[in-house]
Length: 87
Image (cartoon, rainbow, N blue to C red; front, side, top):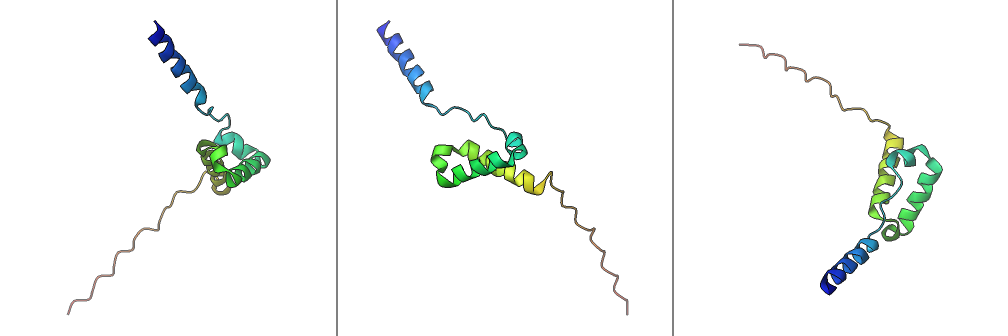
């Protein structure tokens, strides 16, 4: 019984140590440029404290604001070489 209590207490403590999931989303950051600017400044100043997930979302939101939905690359069709004259 004591072992079960110890194991469950350790599990609860380890679960409490995890960083909470960010409540932001890429869409909410992209929609609010002032907050996005603050988050980017926090990521630049102390990325370890801010967290990788939030910094990645901020960079993705910045990319979406800059690029929009993006345009797919559609190259021009290749021209066929002119046939060589026969001798």
